[in-house]
Image 1 (cartoon, rainbow over the protein chains, first blue to last red):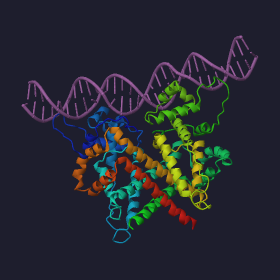
Image 2: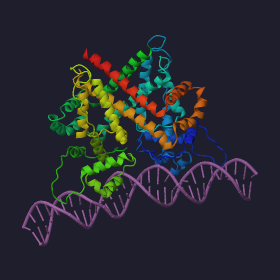
Image 3: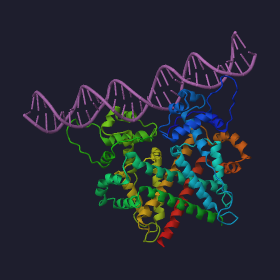
Image 4: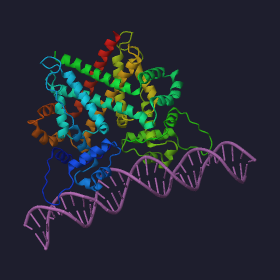
Length: 259
Length: 259
DNA sequence: CATCATTTGGGTACGGCGTACGCAAACTAT
DNA sequence: ATAGTTTGCGTACGCCGTACCCAAATGATG
């Protein structure tokens, strides 16, 4: 989503993120603050999605002209970067130290699980974050604070620094993908106005023809997977299943890394 | 990426996908085929990305007017759905039956790994697929053929139908997310024209201030994670690490499901 | 062959987008 | 009072998806 062809100043974006501006004091006083713009952007994206987010719409929300935003922001892409860092700052943890286990710290699994669920909640609060996955936003205070807090979940359990990062990347990646799957599944019936039953009814004639021929396995498993408990419940089950599996994979790794 | 607010006929899209059209034979002969349009769309997206994909551009590639496409396709969104199904049809497998292990079939892990690598190759051939993750496209022949072939990797190893689907969803989800991470990491220096060194140089002054204060852990681990072997090699390592971890998680599940 | 119904190709146009450019207003320093 | 600097924003340009409509091409019917 498109910052391709971008030639904008990344260092200036960092200054914006960390609040390091010159602010010479001269000239007309700004009646419009960067924080308000970013907040309006987040609000606009929260209801309306990334598609509904336009510079004019953000400006309307603030009661200013569209071009006024460009006095504080270089690009729409830069505004999006600032928005990301702002919502990442919302995440808070307070996993102190131990959890279930011994004082050496064996509650890492429950801590990682808490990290996963917090991230899922974040994505559900701001679904447009899911569509920003392909660009690596600059490291702002919100991004780093979140990273720092989440590293604490896997700190001191016998992993090297690189391994801690690898584990965290894996878990966060799983959460993003699984949450995207949940959101897509949830938005499907609402978009076409059909329930799950009608959706399958529309697909069935095509499935039936193909069932006895080449794709018998797909037809059988697909039916079982979606018709089992009803669409939404199934997506929830997939979330729990995947999370357990990922944590199992981490657990076997942590076990042998400690050896 | 917007098909929000879509009210288009999904059944007609299915007919297009499976080649079930009326084709009354009357009227002017079509000088433009649906296949050519979809192929041109894929080609346009391959070089230029999803941002660069516009109806006018696809039409130019075919030497026709932009509005001519709408005789064969309802929407841009429908064209995208057709494009997705077409590229999914590219994936081919020939995992016969056994692999490394006993005739009962214990080569599932290598088969799943082959599935994962094939999907990564697919995403690298068509990076725009990564940005289409949030919409669940209709089940066309390419989608189902791929699903069927991939289910074969986990068929007959003691899992229920639902569990087979869950495992496959988990692995494919990991591949998508990890590949997106690789792509984002790769595109970062090319976008700003900087190498990894300059990127860190730009971030360093801000990191330094924060290092001793609140986010010491993040600063230490972040530096270790990215500076270890150089950016790109690290991303490759993250891919292998995550894949092994996911497969480990599946393995422990398969083991206890067989009990 | 003439006529009509039907289907395809595509030109024009509309509303929305990101944003380059330039000017008027507001403010500080002199 | 004047100059210099910064902010707000109106206008305009080139993109985009696509609604609408008409001309060209073809099969069916007389």
